[in-house]
Length: 135
Image (cartoon, rainbow, N blue to C red; front, side, top):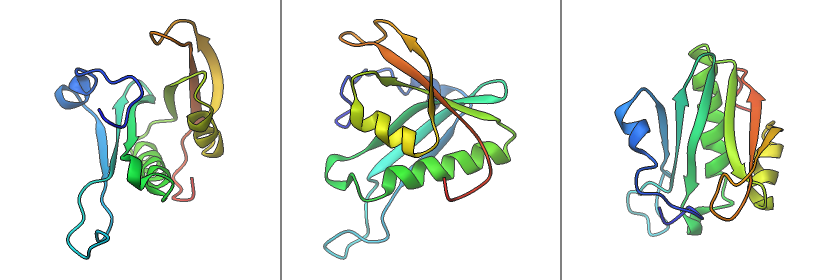
């Protein structure tokens, strides 16, 4: 919840209760040499031939270290191997950082959803899935 601009307590309920692909990013070692703790996660909900990226979050001090990119690449590989053809997500239209992140990973804007968030519109973005760890 701390990593999200607009947290919602029930956001992960469908991911916990239903079929999902969930991945967690854990560095090899913490900065102090102890066993590392999770720093991020991704959850996708399978749909017919498509999966919905319900959550992608990386803790603030661990951003821009490749964890989000690794989570998206691994998730895309897993979903493609499971037979999904497309990954879909929604992103706040005004969040330029998130949009640039998804653009760089092959997502394209498909539609606008007015007033999706309390204070902003959302963009629906999709990308084709291929088995490749270079996503």
